[in-house]
Image (cartoon, rainbow, N blue to C red):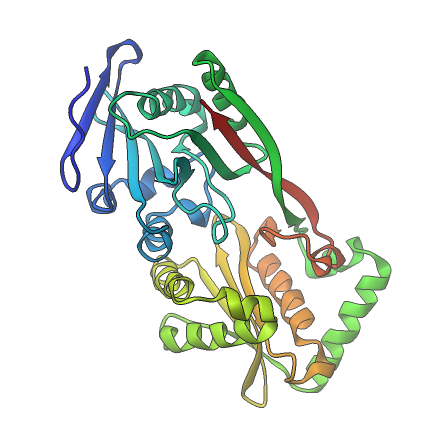
Length: 352
């Protein structure tokens, strides 16, 4: 039996006795408030557990980057004892349903639920999405689904049961380095030419007294993020044009939340006090996630500080005991010079 959907603090209860779960539809950004105490606990156990499933990131993206005239629809699935089993945050834009966060700024997206619950939770969520009480859509486009996600198998089956068509395509690649126990072991594992280049550039930077700076909790984080964004814009014309006010705000909001959670790794290389290269990373679940980078090409160009900073970031990751170094989306050549190997992220499209 279905209720009537209303916005803000009220919820639509969609009870499916056959699967012994309760599906609720929350309309509007108040979902972030209503689920505040439960969201990150579930996300940290999720089948796709990345910095992009956290409440802070999801809220920041919606607040600053959601398309005009779109609405947020958050579907929750609970057990009969009220235990939260799944969160699916979506929006509809021009007749197409997307994950909240899709597409440009967010590297991994998925239904938030435990892997063991994926099939029954997706079943409940898809029933909600296709019910008469859910706003009309003509097409589903779910971007950036990781290659190991059960979603890739489950969703096409559910769609077929309802007579819908499904297509899947590789959307982009996320090159990843599997990290060994020591930095020396890492250097020995990569191509010998690249190893020598990295070692040479590290020595040259050391000779110029280039300094690695990692922003700490007591530092002025707002100023540090502004410095990073200035370097990001100087990197390329494309990044200069890409960095609008909304994306600036996402960087600031996400940095503040990640610093509070102990997962921000904002790094700079500086010479004589001048910061010339930067990495905006997350240190989350024994993995480094390289969200974006910045470089002033006119500052100390002979020192190759972008390469030096990446090498230092890999060395730091190993020292922290991280198992992987994820460059996130994009097949830029430099990532492979550091020994990264592609993993795929997928787009799943469903048509009525």
